[in-house]
Image 1 (cartoon, rainbow, N blue to C red):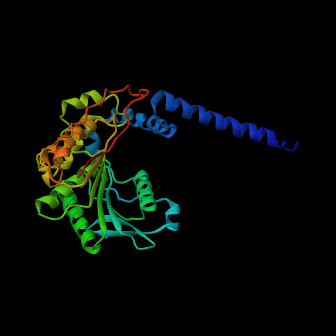
Image 2 (cartoon, rainbow, N blue to C red; image 1 turned 60 degrees about the vertical axis):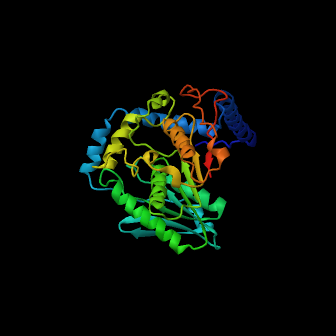
Image 3 (cartoon, rainbow, N blue to C red; image 1 turned 45 degrees about the horizontal axis):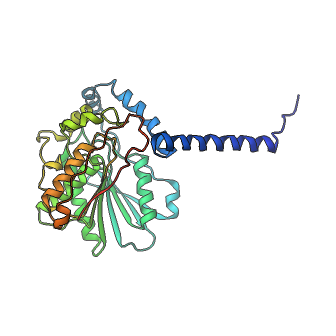
Length: 331
């Protein structure tokens, strides 16, 4: 029986160099072709098949299947390395799981983070990794509730539980900076919570940070059609159907569901991040314009700021030099 041949150090070096050159070449291609990182390109290659597969099953059928099954447990796994930087605690708030990331040294800020998922999917590892990153980079405590979801629940229960949690977080952290933050559906819900506080005459968060917020669940903005092919993940028809399930008997244009229809004058210190190839961009551009029009704490110069111009829609694969996502800030 022959002994296995040893792999020489030279061959290992050649293999490592080949991998390095391949990665470098793909990174250069991604930068030159799409104007973005290799990681961003790989992420799109990964999510585009999800959009294709989802289109094969009607959303109404998907919702019906979910409704016929027992409600799944809501949980999420945080990165293992987090234990070296902070303490992680999970609690139950009237049946709503809440994750608390607590810094080992006293923190001067608390982030209340509302995850996305189209009001139908709970938080996933990507949300946990983002919360982990926020906690380690900012030194803030983070509170992330896994709120009730459609089709087993509608907006009213989630709204009540999250609003109560936010108020309790503020009361338990006097003198600390409170940041209300959310992405996608969670961004829309965060805006709704801020509007609810304004309606009740309560103080706004020190910062309201919205990442691609879903501010209109009707998805009736005609400009959305220009972005359907460019968006690698989402399509308007399924979102509208999910929105109707989330709304229950409440009209989808109610501001508790679509904050774009609310009185925005009470919102303060809002920062919106949105990509230039998302179907959520047109509604966010309109939301931005309405925030400027509503005024609130904006000075005269900011009120005269022109509305953001919607960029030319790039090819689904992107175009060289395409504009990158930019935050819009309102004070």
